[in-house]
Image (tube, rainbow, N blue to C red; front, side):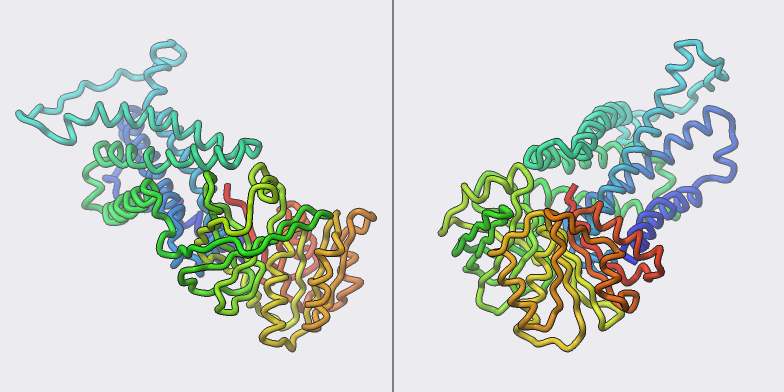
Length: 444
């Protein structure tokens, strides 16, 4: 369901903008000869590139009212990524259509029809849209080159996360340059046609979102301040529990939600799942695996009393599904939201059957002990898939343990490849797509 929803949102953005643009064209605009058609397509690809980038910039500002229809902030970032790639594709097409004919003519590769003479009358005095066309075109071209470089860095997984964040801060500035480029160069007739109101709304909302991002005010209304109260490192699996005592108001959270945390250092805020239930006592617990350049350093760099800024909560991994029967699958540190849910159930009670599968290659006994205890306390069936002993969790092994698995809602959090494989196998065996819930915990 979540993937269908994301694909539908992406298709709506692309097809909706393309449809509005087509409705705004004069009759026969696409069939008026090579040069006139080329001009029309330059305009259309520009509209699509700018419109899709605007939606991406708006989503990057984390507007929480979109969480429910899109299925959570983690889905925002997947859609944001698709929109960015599509916007770049249309931008390159826009640039190619504008530059390509001249290059083809200069190289003599193909004989193109002669370009019609430019017969527009020049009115006296300053005309904003006429006199700024050349500067707008030039800055737009340089913005495209920068955009290509930044998108390539964002998609290059080996590029360190901290540098990705720093380079990505240029995106709102590039967007504002493209706002100027688009405002000056887009066909002025569009503003009074079906495309006009939507384009104006995207331009205004995107500009506001870009300014918020430039001044680093994203999520400022959802921030709480505190300090680290406890630290506990599990040596066996290199997982660090960080307890943060908040000193300002926190709106509370549900099990399965996450927050962006800045530990009062030079790094930007990072997203971590909250592994504690909310008891209205100001205490949040984050269970962090040392996987990346940043998280691997936390065990040695954090100390009790260190300041922390927490922004959130976000996410819709909320254990609310169609069936009372549930199966939880946690891969590695992906068990974190299930720990929070166990703690929530220990407080509130539970009556529905639940099976928790914890798949890990490094089963640390000290880390698992409280999970087993909580599972026993709440009546949740706990199953360990120990990869270090070739005990891999597959659909076949799960089916043996839970014969009625097709009647359950499946909640998965863990490595992307593991989740996609499990989802594909379950859907192939007849599980409805709406019953497989997966956290898409990728911020790039």
